Image (cartoon, rainbow, N blue to C red; front, side, top):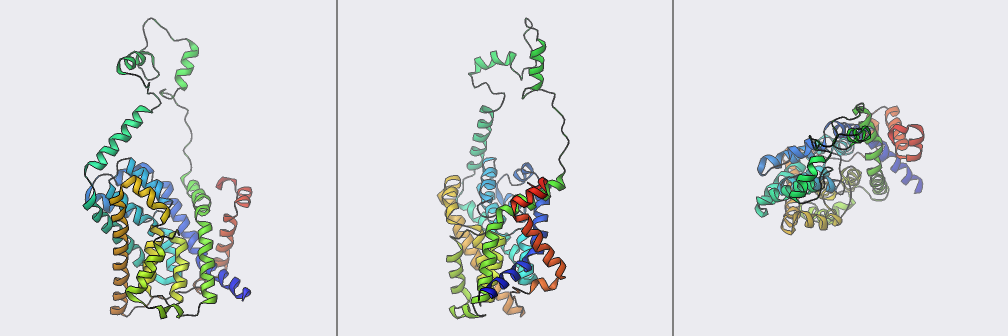
Length: 388
């Protein structure tokens, strides 16, 4: 039994290794070539346009339900509307380039296409529902507060009254004029040139963005998801070993099974990548594709720990609408998938333990050992210090 379990866990890992490497690399390139300032600029403002931009921008980003929170809060405090923030909060953790790649490997092209489409529908629909409980003044007031705080805490702020500030400005580091009665000493000139407001700066070479992408993908991002990915792969291996195919089908399919997946997924913390092998195991055990899709949508997008922070940043009404819209739309997308499969006669089947056979063994095994090497932080740092 133990030997079979370890064998199945290894097979699941082989299934995901190559596609996970491809997804990690794509995520690193996105991170390196798209700045945070660009992200914040795209999702500012109100209405459908900002909701669409937030959903489309967040979909490929490799952030899980906890990792997306600081990014979304930073956007919100930088002036993004509440509805755009909610849209970003849903589309980002529900899907990413790496999770889509793993979905393709474990559940085939149909689920790999339908999953991100469903995530975008969830994000846009919930964002639109959020407009029913938001005030147009919310964003402006938040943005004004942030600007005021930035001015008060800037490196050149004197923190004095207006009259005092006028006196200080005559000789401050930001002043363009010096008092006529005072000539700068040589030592003062050196200090001025090295101050935070000096016009001269040391020119540093621009970092290699491709190396930054590799460092982010092979170190920072992998470190963030490796624990949860390992848990997901082990759970999938357990399901493959202990649960007979079709066993969970006795508990029903359709809406009842989707409601069960909703209750299981909402409080759970699991990232989009780690949820994929678990979902494949559920599919193999007999859970319907629609119910599996519900789990894939709500599991990564919500967890109990995030609700208190969302309430603090967005308010109780917006948080409640966020949970309501996500739940209802996830159920609708699950039912839509079931209807589509029935009408078209299509099938979605898990290929746990079989996906790696589509690739040459050297690629599957090589990818697996590369991932193991990168996940071992001390070894990685010793051999490739640039990755950190």
